[in-house]
Image (cartoon, rainbow, N blue to C red):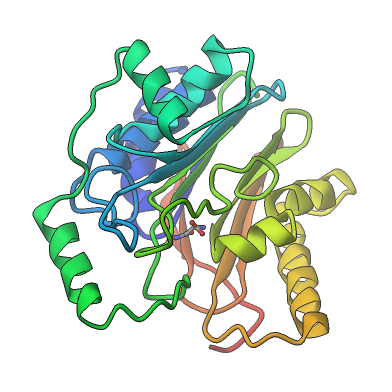
Amino acid sequence: MVLSTWDYGLRTNEVAWRLLSQGGAALDAVLAGAEFAEMDPDNAYVGLGGFPDRDGIVTLDASVMDHGYNMGMVAGLEQVPRAAALARAVMERTPHTLLVGDGALQFAQEQGFETMNLLTPSSEAAWKRWLETSRYQPGVNVENHDTMGLVGLDAQGRLAGVCTTSGMAFKMHGRVGDSPIIGAGLYVDGSVGGATATGHGEEVIRTVGSFRVVAAMTAGKSPQAACKQAVEEIHRFFVRRGVDWGDTQIGFIAVNLHGETGAYALRPGFSYAVRTQDRDELIRVPSLLEA
Ligand code: SD4
Protein backbone atom coordinates (compact mmCIF):
# COMPACT_ATOMS: atom_id res chain seq x y z
CA MET A 1 0.00 0.00 0.00
CA VAL A 2 0.98 3.63 -0.34
CA LEU A 3 -0.29 6.88 1.11
CA SER A 4 0.50 10.42 0.00
CA THR A 5 -0.24 13.92 1.24
CA TRP A 6 -2.84 16.26 -0.28
CA ASP A 7 -5.22 15.81 -3.24
CA TYR A 8 -2.19 15.55 -5.51
CA GLY A 9 -1.43 12.32 -3.65
CA LEU A 10 -3.91 10.47 -5.87
CA ARG A 11 -1.46 11.01 -8.72
CA THR A 12 1.72 10.14 -6.83
CA ASN A 13 0.00 7.04 -5.44
CA GLU A 14 -0.89 5.89 -8.93
CA VAL A 15 2.77 6.04 -9.93
CA ALA A 16 3.97 4.33 -6.74
CA TRP A 17 1.26 1.68 -6.94
CA ARG A 18 2.38 0.63 -10.42
CA LEU A 19 5.62 -0.60 -8.82
CA LEU A 20 4.15 -1.92 -5.59
CA SER A 21 1.47 -3.95 -7.36
CA GLN A 22 4.18 -5.72 -9.34
CA GLY A 23 6.06 -6.71 -6.18
CA GLY A 24 8.36 -3.67 -6.23
CA ALA A 25 10.17 -2.36 -3.18
CA ALA A 26 8.52 0.33 -1.07
CA LEU A 27 11.61 2.52 -1.43
CA ASP A 28 11.52 2.43 -5.24
CA ALA A 29 7.78 3.03 -5.25
CA VAL A 30 7.72 6.10 -3.02
CA LEU A 31 10.70 7.56 -4.89
CA ALA A 32 8.88 7.10 -8.21
CA GLY A 33 5.84 8.90 -6.82
CA ALA A 34 7.97 11.76 -5.49
CA GLU A 35 9.78 12.12 -8.79
CA PHE A 36 6.51 12.35 -10.69
CA ALA A 37 5.53 15.38 -8.59
CA GLU A 38 8.99 16.91 -8.85
CA MET A 39 8.99 16.75 -12.65
CA ASP A 40 5.48 18.17 -12.97
CA PRO A 41 6.00 21.88 -13.75
CA ASP A 42 2.44 22.59 -12.68
CA ASN A 43 2.99 21.50 -9.09
CA ALA A 44 4.20 24.79 -7.63
CA TYR A 45 5.38 23.36 -4.31
CA VAL A 46 7.77 20.62 -5.41
CA GLY A 47 10.73 20.31 -7.78
CA LEU A 48 10.56 21.92 -11.23
CA GLY A 49 8.22 24.92 -11.15
CA GLY A 50 8.27 25.19 -7.37
CA PHE A 51 7.80 28.70 -6.01
CA PRO A 52 11.18 30.40 -5.50
CA ASP A 53 12.50 32.11 -2.42
CA ARG A 54 12.20 35.87 -1.99
CA ASP A 55 15.31 36.36 -4.16
CA GLY A 56 13.74 34.43 -7.04
CA ILE A 57 15.80 31.26 -6.53
CA VAL A 58 14.08 27.86 -6.36
CA THR A 59 15.64 25.79 -3.57
CA LEU A 60 14.50 22.26 -2.83
CA ASP A 61 14.43 20.15 0.34
CA ALA A 62 13.92 16.38 0.50
CA SER A 63 14.44 13.36 2.72
CA VAL A 64 14.10 9.62 2.40
CA MET A 65 14.14 6.83 4.98
CA ASP A 66 13.81 3.07 4.68
CA HIS A 67 12.82 0.18 6.94
CA GLY A 68 16.39 -0.31 8.15
CA TYR A 69 16.94 3.18 9.64
CA ASN A 70 18.87 4.23 6.55
CA MET A 71 18.29 7.85 5.63
CA GLY A 72 19.34 10.58 3.23
CA MET A 73 18.55 14.27 3.16
CA VAL A 74 19.25 17.26 0.93
CA ALA A 75 18.46 20.89 1.70
CA GLY A 76 18.74 24.19 -0.11
CA LEU A 77 19.32 22.34 -3.37
CA GLU A 78 19.35 24.43 -6.56
CA GLN A 79 18.98 23.41 -10.23
CA VAL A 80 18.36 19.70 -9.62
CA PRO A 81 14.67 18.83 -9.79
CA ARG A 82 15.00 15.23 -8.55
CA ALA A 83 15.70 16.18 -4.94
CA ALA A 84 14.25 12.96 -3.47
CA ALA A 85 16.42 10.76 -5.70
CA LEU A 86 19.42 12.83 -4.66
CA ALA A 87 18.52 12.25 -1.00
CA ARG A 88 18.46 8.54 -1.80
CA ALA A 89 21.91 8.86 -3.40
CA VAL A 90 23.19 10.53 -0.23
CA MET A 91 21.79 7.56 1.69
CA GLU A 92 23.21 4.89 -0.57
CA ARG A 93 26.38 6.37 -2.00
CA THR A 94 27.92 8.48 0.78
CA PRO A 95 28.85 7.83 4.41
CA HIS A 96 26.72 10.88 5.33
CA THR A 97 23.06 11.64 5.96
CA LEU A 98 22.63 15.29 4.89
CA LEU A 99 24.11 17.44 2.15
CA VAL A 100 23.18 21.09 1.67
CA GLY A 101 23.41 23.89 -0.88
CA ASP A 102 26.47 23.96 -3.14
CA GLY A 103 27.76 20.67 -1.76
CA ALA A 104 24.49 18.94 -2.60
CA LEU A 105 24.60 20.40 -6.12
CA GLN A 106 28.23 19.33 -6.58
CA PHE A 107 27.36 15.80 -5.47
CA ALA A 108 24.38 15.75 -7.85
CA GLN A 109 26.60 16.74 -10.77
CA GLU A 110 29.19 14.11 -9.85
CA GLN A 111 26.40 11.54 -9.78
CA GLY A 112 25.13 12.56 -13.21
CA PHE A 113 21.88 14.18 -12.09
CA GLU A 114 20.33 16.47 -14.67
CA THR A 115 20.37 20.19 -13.88
CA MET A 116 17.98 22.79 -15.26
CA ASN A 117 16.41 26.14 -14.53
CA LEU A 118 13.72 25.25 -11.98
CA LEU A 119 11.98 28.63 -12.25
CA THR A 120 9.17 28.20 -14.77
CA PRO A 121 7.37 31.17 -16.36
CA SER A 122 4.41 30.66 -14.02
CA SER A 123 6.47 30.40 -10.82
CA GLU A 124 8.46 33.45 -11.94
CA ALA A 125 5.23 35.36 -12.61
CA ALA A 126 3.94 34.46 -9.14
CA TRP A 127 7.20 35.68 -7.59
CA LYS A 128 6.97 38.97 -9.53
CA ARG A 129 3.42 39.44 -8.28
CA TRP A 130 4.69 38.81 -4.75
CA LEU A 131 7.51 41.36 -5.28
CA GLU A 132 4.93 44.09 -5.84
CA THR A 133 4.19 44.08 -2.13
CA SER A 134 7.11 41.93 -0.88
CA ARG A 135 5.14 41.33 2.27
CA TYR A 136 7.29 38.88 4.17
CA GLN A 137 4.80 36.60 5.78
CA PRO A 138 6.11 33.08 5.48
CA GLY A 139 3.53 30.55 6.42
CA VAL A 140 1.80 27.45 5.30
CA ASN A 141 -1.93 27.63 5.44
CA VAL A 142 -4.73 25.87 3.69
CA GLU A 143 -4.01 27.85 0.51
CA ASN A 144 -0.28 27.26 0.38
CA HIS A 145 0.58 23.59 0.30
CA ASP A 146 1.35 20.47 -1.74
CA THR A 147 4.60 19.34 -0.19
CA MET A 148 4.59 15.67 -1.12
CA GLY A 149 5.08 13.09 1.62
CA LEU A 150 4.66 9.42 0.74
CA VAL A 151 4.91 6.32 2.91
CA GLY A 152 4.76 2.87 1.33
CA LEU A 153 4.53 -0.68 2.63
CA ASP A 154 5.49 -3.40 0.17
CA ALA A 155 4.48 -7.06 -0.18
CA GLN A 156 7.52 -8.10 1.83
CA GLY A 157 6.50 -5.92 4.76
CA ARG A 158 9.16 -3.28 4.15
CA LEU A 159 8.33 0.35 4.85
CA ALA A 160 9.85 3.41 3.20
CA GLY A 161 9.05 7.09 3.17
CA VAL A 162 9.94 10.24 1.29
CA CYS A 163 9.20 13.92 1.70
CA THR A 164 9.98 16.51 -1.00
CA THR A 165 9.23 20.22 -1.34
CA SER A 166 10.30 23.63 -2.56
CA GLY A 167 9.39 24.82 0.92
CA MET A 168 7.50 27.93 1.81
CA ALA A 169 6.85 30.23 -1.11
CA PHE A 170 9.07 33.35 -1.09
CA LYS A 171 10.99 32.23 1.99
CA MET A 172 14.34 33.79 3.02
CA HIS A 173 17.21 32.46 0.92
CA GLY A 174 18.76 29.66 2.95
CA ARG A 175 15.61 28.86 4.91
CA VAL A 176 15.17 25.12 5.41
CA GLY A 177 11.91 23.59 6.55
CA ASP A 178 10.98 20.29 8.16
CA SER A 179 10.74 18.21 4.99
CA PRO A 180 14.46 17.35 4.71
CA ILE A 181 14.87 16.82 8.47
CA ILE A 182 14.45 13.22 9.55
CA GLY A 183 12.32 13.12 12.67
CA ALA A 184 10.54 16.35 11.71
CA GLY A 185 9.14 15.96 8.17
CA LEU A 186 9.57 12.18 7.96
CA TYR A 187 10.28 9.20 10.15
CA VAL A 188 10.12 5.47 9.53
CA ASP A 189 10.64 2.68 12.03
CA GLY A 190 10.70 -0.55 10.04
CA SER A 191 9.33 -2.53 12.98
CA VAL A 192 6.44 -0.16 13.75
CA GLY A 193 5.35 2.27 11.03
CA GLY A 194 6.09 5.51 9.26
CA ALA A 195 4.83 9.09 9.28
CA THR A 196 5.32 12.26 7.28
CA ALA A 197 4.34 15.86 7.84
CA THR A 198 3.16 18.86 5.91
CA GLY A 199 2.47 22.39 6.97
CA HIS A 200 4.43 25.03 8.81
CA GLY A 201 7.92 23.56 8.87
CA GLU A 202 9.28 25.62 11.75
CA GLU A 203 6.63 24.24 14.06
CA VAL A 204 7.14 20.67 12.86
CA ILE A 205 10.89 20.99 13.49
CA ARG A 206 10.32 22.57 16.91
CA THR A 207 8.21 19.65 17.98
CA VAL A 208 9.99 16.81 16.12
CA GLY A 209 6.64 16.04 14.56
CA SER A 210 6.97 12.83 12.54
CA PHE A 211 9.09 11.11 15.19
CA ARG A 212 6.40 12.08 17.69
CA VAL A 213 3.79 10.24 15.59
CA VAL A 214 5.95 7.11 15.20
CA ALA A 215 6.80 7.17 18.93
CA ALA A 216 3.08 7.18 19.72
CA MET A 217 2.59 4.19 17.40
CA THR A 218 5.52 2.44 19.13
CA ALA A 219 3.69 3.00 22.41
CA GLY A 220 0.68 1.17 20.95
CA LYS A 221 -1.47 3.86 19.38
CA SER A 222 -3.13 3.32 16.02
CA PRO A 223 -1.85 5.57 13.21
CA GLN A 224 -5.01 7.68 13.50
CA ALA A 225 -4.70 8.09 17.28
CA ALA A 226 -0.95 8.74 16.98
CA CYS A 227 -1.45 11.57 14.46
CA LYS A 228 -4.17 13.08 16.63
CA GLN A 229 -2.02 12.89 19.75
CA ALA A 230 0.89 14.60 17.98
CA VAL A 231 -1.29 17.47 16.75
CA GLU A 232 -2.82 17.90 20.22
CA GLU A 233 0.64 17.98 21.82
CA ILE A 234 1.88 20.53 19.29
CA HIS A 235 -1.18 22.66 19.90
CA ARG A 236 -0.50 22.52 23.65
CA PHE A 237 3.05 23.76 23.07
CA PHE A 238 1.66 26.61 21.06
CA VAL A 239 -0.76 27.63 23.74
CA ARG A 240 2.00 27.46 26.35
CA ARG A 241 4.32 29.63 24.26
CA GLY A 242 1.52 32.13 23.86
CA VAL A 243 2.25 32.92 20.22
CA ASP A 244 -0.24 33.96 17.60
CA TRP A 245 -0.03 31.48 14.79
CA GLY A 246 -2.64 32.94 12.49
CA ASP A 247 -3.93 30.38 10.02
CA THR A 248 -0.92 28.07 10.27
CA GLN A 249 -1.55 24.51 9.19
CA ILE A 250 0.14 21.29 10.34
CA GLY A 251 -0.84 17.80 9.22
CA PHE A 252 0.48 14.26 9.57
CA ILE A 253 -0.19 11.02 7.76
CA ALA A 254 0.90 7.64 9.11
CA VAL A 255 0.79 3.91 8.43
CA ASN A 256 1.74 0.95 10.57
CA LEU A 257 3.03 -2.49 9.68
CA HIS A 258 -0.53 -3.90 9.76
CA GLY A 259 -1.42 -1.54 6.93
CA GLU A 260 -3.64 0.65 9.11
CA THR A 261 -3.49 4.32 8.11
CA GLY A 262 -4.36 7.58 9.79
CA ALA A 263 -4.05 11.33 9.49
CA TYR A 264 -4.84 14.39 11.54
CA ALA A 265 -4.40 18.12 11.03
CA LEU A 266 -4.54 21.28 13.04
CA ARG A 267 -7.10 22.85 10.72
CA PRO A 268 -9.56 21.70 8.08
CA GLY A 269 -8.39 21.55 4.48
CA PHE A 270 -5.83 18.75 4.63
CA SER A 271 -6.32 15.56 2.63
CA TYR A 272 -4.42 12.39 1.88
CA ALA A 273 -4.69 9.61 -0.64
CA VAL A 274 -4.52 5.87 0.02
CA ARG A 275 -3.88 3.21 -2.58
CA THR A 276 -4.06 -0.53 -1.94
CA GLN A 277 -5.21 -3.56 -3.91
CA ASP A 278 -8.83 -2.61 -3.20
CA ARG A 279 -8.69 1.09 -2.42
CA ASP A 280 -7.89 4.23 -4.38
CA GLU A 281 -9.33 7.07 -2.38
CA LEU A 282 -8.87 10.58 -1.16
CA ILE A 283 -9.62 11.11 2.50
CA ARG A 284 -10.56 14.43 4.07
CA VAL A 285 -8.51 14.67 7.23
CA PRO A 286 -10.17 15.49 10.56
CA SER A 287 -8.76 18.51 12.42
CA LEU A 288 -8.35 19.80 15.96
CA LEU A 289 -9.55 23.34 15.22
CA GLU A 290 -12.60 24.40 13.29
CA ALA A 291 -10.80 26.76 10.90
C1 SD4 B 1 7.95 23.58 4.74
N1 SD4 B 1 6.52 21.77 5.40
O1 SD4 B 1 8.91 23.85 4.01
C2 SD4 B 1 6.96 22.54 4.28
C3 SD4 B 1 5.84 23.22 3.55
C4 SD4 B 1 4.65 22.37 3.24
O2 SD4 B 1 2.86 21.90 1.90
O3 SD4 B 1 4.37 21.38 3.87
N2 SD4 B 1 3.86 22.70 2.25
O4 SD4 B 1 7.76 24.15 5.81
